[in-house]
Amino acid sequence: MDDVHLGELRLGGIDTVQLLTPDGMRLSDDRYDAWISDIGDEQLLSFYEDMVVIRRIDTEATALQRQGELGLWPPLLGQEAAQIGSGRALRSDDFVFSSYRENGVAYCRGAQLTDLVRVWRGTAQSGWNPYDINMATPQVIIGAQTLHATGYALGIQADGTDAVAVAYFGDGATSEGDVNEAMIFAATYAAPVIFFCQNNQYAISEPVSLQAQRPIAERAPGFGIPSVRVDGNDVLAVLAVMRSALERARTGGGPTFIEAVTYRMGPHTTADDPTRYRDPAELEQWKVKDPIARVGAYLSRQGALSADREEQVAAKADRVAAELRAGCVSLPDPDPMTVFDNVYAEAHTGIARQRDHYSRYLRTFVGGDGR
Image (tube, rainbow, N blue to C red; front, side, top):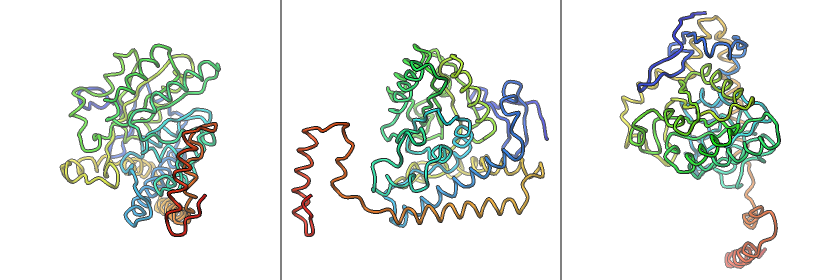
């Protein structure tokens, strides 16, 4: 193992935890090495495979959207380490509250492939039952999930268990009132919640520098919440930092704010054109920090990633992509009236009225069944 005692990288004027350099060199950090002492080459190979597979899923879903099979897709290209590293640190009884881009986390939680695309194909209002995988329906309202996570964490606290709630959001969400309100509640009641911010450098078309004059991780201490900045393209560092924060929450230490510094290599969504606001040179600079390439470089140096193993991983990724495509195009169209199902837990006069109006509207079309 290449072992250099340099566990922190200076990014934006603040120390950032890093355990794997962009060229795959293993660094040492006295604070975090113990948290990944159980991760050998085989375990790291499994993370490498996860990242390759989720990138392939992302590529296939983007292609499906371009071919008219999906209405929209939010790519995660470049953010694989932040999602896999944190997602694999969780226990099954932890509960995740995410935005719409955390498909890698959903994959770690056990979401079925077609569950990832149901909403984007317009055949369902939610991809999965949240209680099946302990992950809430992805939130489109920016930052709202932080309040949901904090509320759930207070429930965990009341139940007396040691599960943890995790809120995933982007750098842009930190400007929303919801995120700040959630941190106030979490700090006040020492809630077992982790605020995991994936700073991918852009809030839609605005660079993070426009809304954050200082590193985002510096905000949380003002609320009384300890924070850590981690290289979000380093799956080992993300895993270590996440495990540390989870243990703190489980043992009554309260919330932690994690800023994972990464980069959105694709568009905000497939409706976005990043070439209108992003310098191509910037993209090239981040490509050399690719999260998959750095793990591959380390494993190759260790002699753990052979050409045969690489081919096996690539073949699995292609099989998964084919399964995703087949599942997507075979999703049945829902009955139009099911749009009113599960809006309220009990019968509601307003919904009944809307259902009646919509039913009469459908009858005005040829073939309307009048239901």
